[in-house]
Image (cartoon, rainbow, N blue to C red; front, side):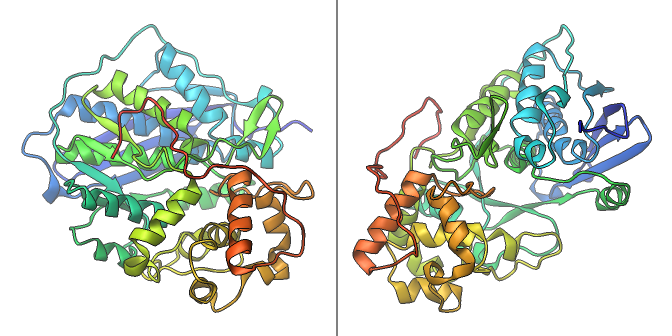
Length: 427
């Protein structure tokens, strides 16, 4: 049965920013009846002496587009209306990518077909990017291996940067205090009362391209502070499809892919400023290589303070001051695979209350999905590619005699091969 929304139009109502308070607001609705307001609070004390208001407004418009995914998903409609920030032809294509492939997991899990996905009309106009003088970088942090490694590599290169974290409450991971630099934060306030109300009326739910939202907010804060670059910590990941809707790949990590990074960077270059840089210096590394580098350069300092487990740390209302591992989810299984070749078994298992995750029968199907065995679908999570995880397992088995209760196909994956691309962000 085809999906039928309770509404006809999703409306991009307006966005605003108060320079005196550092508060941005993004407003959306369905048919001007069901309203949503998301807020972003910047730190007033970090405001640059002279904020480039034209560049800042263009970044706010980009966030207006990306943040909308969090509310559009409740009662998705085919028809979209812009009361502000009407897109031109290229921006409409950008939005199609974002609201189709960026929400592909959501559509897949809610049985929504390509024909029911939104269409973006456009106007004949072009907002020209302008020159911008910024200095310094903000580096996105989460408390996970990738972002801590990036900070360590930049420090090793004597590169000046400011660690940056997006908060949803007053809490943030204590491990970020170990970076040795003042942590800069912004506060995102999702419209939870409105989302709760829609949920009670049968709203849909699912994954959104949160990486794009975080990058958009980081870009706003960088301009607010007079910085010139936003650096993320994303390896060569995300392109491997979990399934397909027609010929469209279903991908949990679309916003983390190389394609998505380059699309985002092109938007920034063409519509905000060619002088702003956004991207990941880790893009050329496989996830397995990142794990190896983390063990070499970061384990002694961060090994028992970091976590890549979303379930234990990043669900709504969770206190993530001290990061933990649940030991039961795909992210934990994925991390166990990636670190198993490089960390002694007892040391690695100490992160998971002393248990060997390979021996946990509750994780057998999860490992089959990660390793592409018995046609089990790859979990919807930010995880490594099948071939590199197979290699990780065989390396760990050879070194530490680990055992899974099923055979894992061999692979010739070269995890140390550096992937090159045309993004001008590099260490």
